[in-house]
Length: 149
Image (cartoon, rainbow, N blue to C red):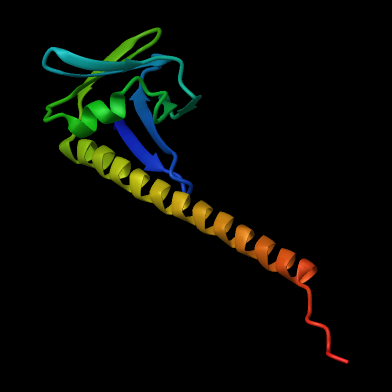
């Protein structure tokens, strides 16, 4: 019966937040995170998964960072406590654990680092292609001095 938010980042620096719900089926497609009078909400998940085992339904909906309605930024920059509301055919609310909120913040920091590394890698590879082009051009068009007679 554990419901929570899971933040993750791919090896290419794409962050995603996944709402994992376990309990009676609610077919949730909307995730709303609030703190006091402020909130962030996202609908239409990137991916949706549901299964049932021993009478307990597990539902997962995932949102890519930037398409998450600002939820990851809201959690990372807020003080909490945060209330998470899942809604669809039914509703379910819970308080976000402090460790889950800290994980969202850490994942966003890691995302920025990975994206910076990827950007530097792309720049390095582009510079290497330019250097190789110049070397090949020089070899092709380099005029050798002729021996004197």
